[in-house]
Each structure stands twice: as C-alpha cells, then as structure tokens.
Image (tube, rainbow, N blue to C red):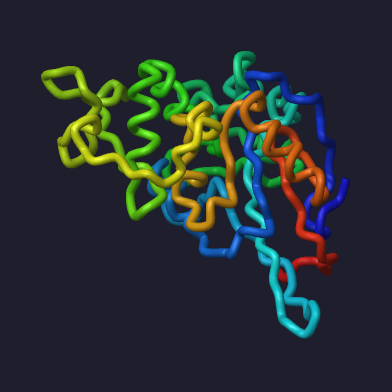
Length: 267
C-alpha cells in the first residue's frame, strides 16, 4: 500500500472490537499543527522529539485553485509490531486488551534497536533521558477513563473548551484524576466538572458512546479531522466515509483520502 509517496507498508491484522484506533479525515485537515503542539504539551517532550508530525503534500492546482494536503504521521500500533521482537529487554509491549504498543521506560536501555526496526520512523531517541520514546495513543487517558462512571464520562465529554475541546483535568501524583470532597471530577482550576454549565455542541448519542477516549491530538484538533476510540464505536464512521471516499489503513490508523490525486510530498 502506498499513499502520496509517504507511506508504504502493511495493513497488518484487522483490529478487534476493543482495539483502540484513529480515523483521520485528510479532507478536513488544514495543517494547523494543533495536534503536534498538544502532543508535546501532554507528554512534556523536550525540543526535537515529536510523537506526531504533519507532512505537507503539494501544492497542486485543482480546478484553478492551489491546494495542499496535510497528512498527520504517527505510530501506527502495528499488529504484529516489528519493533517488539528486536528489543533485548522486552521494554516494548503490545497490550492485548486494546492493541496499544508502548515502551516501558524502566526497562529501556537506549540501544535503539527498535528505532532501526520501525519502518515509519515513529520511534525516536530522547537525548535527555537516553531512552526510546514514541506515541502511546495517550494510554494514560484511556486508563483513567475506565475508572469513571458513564455519567461522568458524558459530562466531561460535553464540557468543552473554546467550543469544541475538553477542559484539562487535574491529576494527582499517582496519575489519578482529582476529585473534590463530594467525589466529583475537577479541572485544573479546581472547579467541579459536574457543577459547570454544559455545552450543547457535539452531544449526539453516537459520540457519547466513545466519549472519554481522547488522545491529546484528537482533542485539540481544530477541525475535528481525527476520530479516536474503540474500533466497535468508530466502524460506523468508517462505513459512512467508505461510501464516497477511499479508506487506507496502516495498523490501527485509518486515513480517509481526498478525491484528488497528489504528487510526492515536499521535503
């Protein structure tokens, strides 16, 4: 499979119902780089490493107008993952419950074998820590979400920042979401989510089904071109897009391609 001359590789095994996947609509991506910025902030990355990077394809004249296509590139959480077996310490693990591939920093010795094994350049070396790092689909957010009640998930999902983004939650030193003395989730301002006025935007039952499964990049996407969640919840969106668009998959990431044919990307 080849897409715009950028990606060429294997789709791998089909995802199961509980596999965490991402659907990226390239027609909606405008290259605002909000995903890159939010990812670096979420993971407190130093200068240099990027878990997600946006590649520009084009420009090309289409019907008299100059257009570009922007393609977010990240770890594809392949199945099977070619980076797992080369690791001499077993630091790279693929979680069977949701298919996320992540690196246990305590086991990583910085040998860079995984970096050489990854065909997509998704794994990077952090000179600050001397260890390999990569996108982990914000697994900490997914794990926190599993501790919430459905009503809490619904409230947090509907409570938005700037019209379409989730307000940042506050976490304790153990990584758990902080609660007030009444047991309600609180944001970084120390105010209870349940006590705030809820926004009405994006309040369909369809979206509530996978509410709470937010990666940092999909949460802050300015055009909502990224849909993130379990495959069982996202496959209906895939079916709808597949009626009019070509869908290409690499590992756990689906791309909804635009109709225009574009040349090899600019460096």
